Amino acid sequence: MRAAFHLRLARRVAANRVRRRLGRPAIPFKLLWNTTHYCNSRCLTCNVWGIYPGEGSQKDEIHGSEAARAIASLGEHLLWLTLTGGEPTLKLNVVETVNAVYDACPHLNFITVNTNAIVPGRTLAVMDAIAAHCRRAEVLAVLSLDGVGTVHDEVRGVPGNFEAVMEARRGLVALRRQRPNLGFCIQSTASRHNVDRFDELLALVRANGDEHLVTLAQEAELYRNRGAGHDVTAERSVLPGLLRLARLYRPRRVRDLVQWAHLRLLQRYVETREAPVPCSAGSSTLTLSPRGDVLGCLFLDNRMGNVRDFGHDLLRLLESPSARRVQEACRSCHQCWTNCESFTSMLSSPVRTVVRAALARPLASGPDAREVPPRVLSER
Image 1 (cartoon, rainbow, N blue to C red):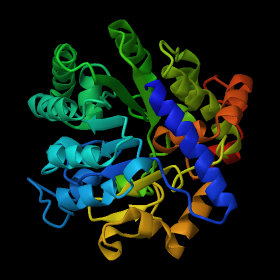
Image 2 (spheres, rainbow, N blue to C red):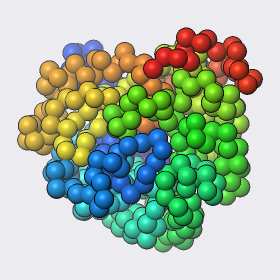
Image 3 (spheres, one colour):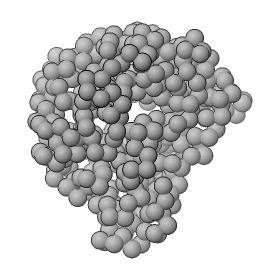
């Protein structure tokens, strides 16, 4: 991330602290746009793809122009826009929506697009079009990769998906020669389906010299998988592999330090079941759902309101009693430790993050994880 982004980020964090002390709602600097429920993956850890069976439909979702109007209402406050889903590259008018937001938000410096890259040509076309228009922003394609070869295909439920991701990666490497503001990284989700094969995945990404984000399988409203046993931090059988992953990760660039701290603090979360730093969901981040609901957190059903009920004005919505209640509830939440929210929480509490990450001690790594309290392992 560029120096200007970090400077504005520090100002936004300080401004939100002042606003809270004055009894005013915080204004988020990051917007997570959950673009669509439509998805062409068939992931073992997620059930979103089942919302629209077959070819699917987006007719009950807000139009891109509505999303653009709502997100753009954050104006100069918006620094970071993340697209997720479903599969964001399949959202109708996704390029036009992002470009309209960029034009309306003068300090939007960071745009990330999570993609399964099942259709490499579509991924490349969307990323090229966004990077070409949003020239002052860093535009990052986040390629999902959960294993090497058939491991990835099995976890994602789509034969040939591994090769499709590799094709998209090669295409992005070529595109970067034309679009200096365009980049990509690999994001891997650790779950019981792949954690015992993560060593070879780490080796592949390291050999390619790619930026690597590691997230954790969760049970969440976003994934429609509550009660399915996917909380990887609470499952005894995968804990040794998960903690080994935290020890094996090595930062290669400055930005990797955030991921390194996330994994170091994961050990504290597993042990205490408490977030290592205060959660800033709802205050640093907002989530806009496919149907226009605004949530404080991507993973909880904590609705603040719907953009259509507030004239597509997020600043107005944030002044509502329901939004203020959600912001307060998120600050004391210990539901998860996943990078969608933990990264902004760590950036909002940098001193506490550095100290706790530096002092984090290794947990059990043996086959039975005997030093990890059984009570912690069974909690949800």
